[in-house]
Amino acid sequence: MAVGDSKPRVLLFGSGSVGTIYLYLLSKVASRITAVCRSNYNIVKNEGFTINSALFGQDIHFTPHVVRNCDKAAIADPTPFDYVLVCNKAIPGTTPHLISPVVTPGHTVIVLVQNGIGIEDEYATAFPNNPIVSCVVYLPVAQRPAGTITHGEVERLEIGSFPASASSEHAESFAKLLRDAGATAEVYDDIQLKRWFKLVVNASWNPLCALTLCTDVEFMESSAPATGLVFDIMLEVCDIAKAYGYTISREEAEHQLGRAKARIAKKKGVEPSMLQDVREGRRMEVEAIVGNTVKLGKKKGVSCQRLEMLYVLISALDSRVGGRST
Image (cartoon, rainbow, N blue to C red):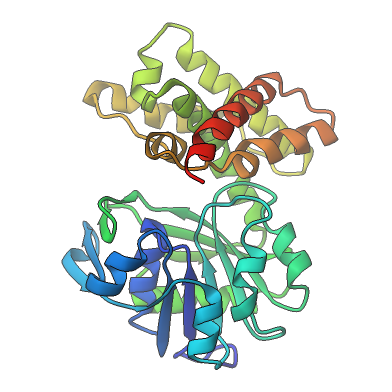
């Protein structure tokens, strides 16, 4: 498909809650959509997805073409995919070789809708001739039970080319496709600023809540110093980002913390993804969210002692929890 065509072929790798919402939206504007389902394959193959969304509608029954892996997708139809939407967890060394059967060199655009910082490099190495579009997503959504997606009132995708120096044509085309489908999508010259901005929240709340089995509100109410610790970790992320040329002010970090503090009065805490993973016995995005942050900080000589301690502790927890799920 030439850039700008309106009927692309799209494959979703990672049919969790986030990926399913976007595949459903893209089904309105794509010529063919395929979902690679692993743990939820049987239920989706037989019954499809059910989506209950505050934005897009209730009791939506959605049945894409479903396969167990990318090999089967490539065998079923050898026509090249225009977009491969990667929405699984950002676990280093796991995804590029799994999607390689459906990535046509020089043609397929790889779209990364994943958390963390420094996640694009392994895709750029594995697929040097393919455009990479990197995305930051804000989408309160869950899949419980398998095949049933519940989505709240926020949907926003921030999009940019990787590296930032690459042409923006593929990012612009993908954003237009999403907007035509009813999604909110905005393109940025350098998406890494947006990744660092989200990391201020993710690298603090995710490991703290997973380690303590607390929602954000429960953690803040657990002791007097708890909220201050969260803010100190946020500031360490800001310091590392600044060392790489991305300025996130103290006021912006305070605003992010304030959003969590506002939930105290409502007694309605947020359960970050790592806490959900611990409770379900799944691996966590330790390296993408915390490990890479620490490595980047140390590379620039930025003090990040709290983040280093979190990394050691969350890595130990992941070795126990993640080990049970394999």
